[in-house]
Amino acid sequence: MTSKNDQKMIFNKQASGVNNTLRELMSKAELHLQAEHQVMAAIPDDLAGGTRFVSCRDGELVLSTDNASKATRLRFRQHEIMSALRENELFRYVWKVKIKVIPPRFNTPNRPEKAPLSKENARLLKEEAGHTKDKALREVLEKLASHVRD
Image (tube, rainbow, N blue to C red; front, side, top):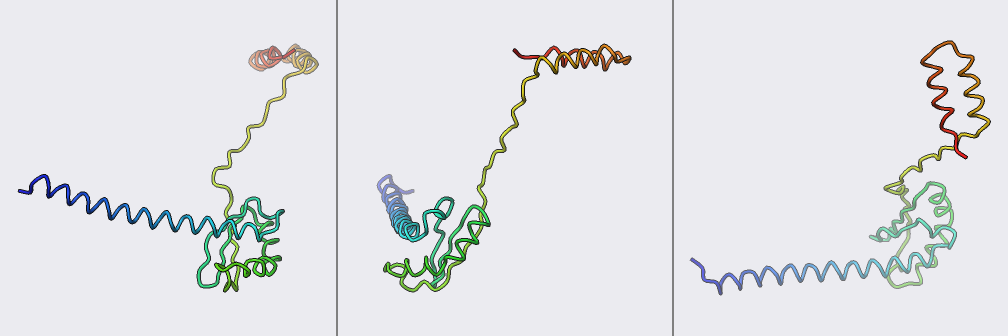
């Protein structure tokens, strides 16, 4: 059996490995954030909303945007964006811009608001209910007419 001291040493070794991995991830995230700030500064203000920096590998800059029309406008201005980015050390060798369209993930559709029933429409429904011979339809029309709001 192993003693408690041996177990503590094993956990400390694993914890230091996890801590080291976490440090690496945090440094990569910080570098990505700095790169994103530089890229967003190079993108024109009218196109910056909804546009994100994805990656830059082997001279290929990848951007994502939320709709196709903005992607088209970014493609038309890609040479302007690349020339502004080449002034930075990180993007000195950028030669290609790839733009992806990624629509927003959770776009909840707005429920249409029901317009309140006017007094005039309620009066017309009651009138129509009076002229209807079908009993079930008459009851439904009268019930609808009772939903008038002041």
